[in-house]
Length: 480
Image 1 (tube, rainbow, N blue to C red):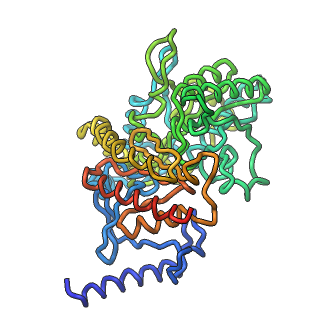
Image 2 (image 1 turned 180 degrees about the horizontal axis):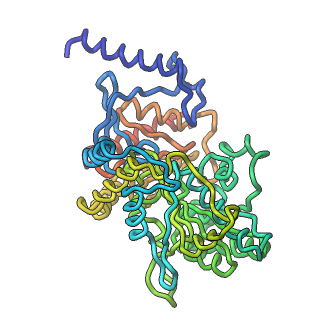
Image 3 (image 1 turned 120 degrees about the vertical axis):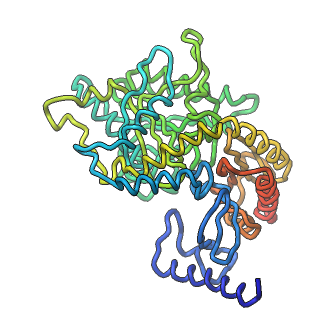
């Protein structure tokens, strides 16, 4: 490639940056950080022309490894041809139709398959109905409203109007979802608009006291949840939690015994359990759904717990199109059947059950079957563990943790869990810039770096990811 062509491609990338910043307001971004002067405080904007596999390709021909699966959505790789073809095929037949009063095969077939794959638990009636929404936050809103409305329809417990959520949890940024979230950066500004939830201690294993292991920490948190339930008899309609990993809260992970305890407590107190598997579903933590990892009750046998509501999105379509699904029980569904429309669930989205998105989701589920994805992921996760382990010896790494295809590196001063890095150091931004310069997209959560790559990532790409992460950690903490 000659110098003139190189210059033309570089200037093309620069033109796209300029056009973008002239008209777009980016999500989850302080736009001042996209400063054109490329100062140390600037957040580089990466124009992407196309993508393939685990790679993003820029207008200048540069290739950047997508280590975060484009906000945790991409499962099988960018531009996966089988999903692309399924969407194209569906687009030639039916692109969309109103789902109120109409039906179409992709919506029906996807609901059937999701219900067949959903977590089950001995002695419980299986999940039996699917309600579609447009995105993860909308799916959470659906589950919250259904849980509240079901109790209201019953009429015998009018005080069940409150939700319990976990400290450090995140469930989206619409007002209902924010109400059950506990990350101040997202919540604080809108606090006057939010419903008042009850927050239980997180089972986060990073918070374990000296001498405790992850299971001890989870049991302590479950005991605190029991006390909270006892303190609010007849007031709580649902508990919402992220099974196994609190993703936006810094990829904090907990022992699955907490899930079993939470399920038992909800049953004792007549409270619905909402499992937000929007980020962790579809194989991210090692099983298709994280709820499957809960240890079984010795009396019932088996493993895994079944929630009353299962919220799915992100990887549902393999990362191609927005779609959410809320799975629930026949008993919940039956609670809305009545001659009165006020007792019906009237929540709606214009693109509910969009045929293109449903077709993408069906194609993604087919890939799980044909490619033995979960088995392959177990091998990839072992490779990720081996590459991540040496990072724990770096001076300012307090913790290296993993749940399946998710690995996180917690940075702190001198590796002391009680001493965070100076916020003025802007370690996350430094790490982000260093990784981007080396051709890897890492998007830290504060002072936590993490890997959540597409499942197609190969050994050479993992080696690049590990080498780059090490360099990024060193660059981020050089002045600590």
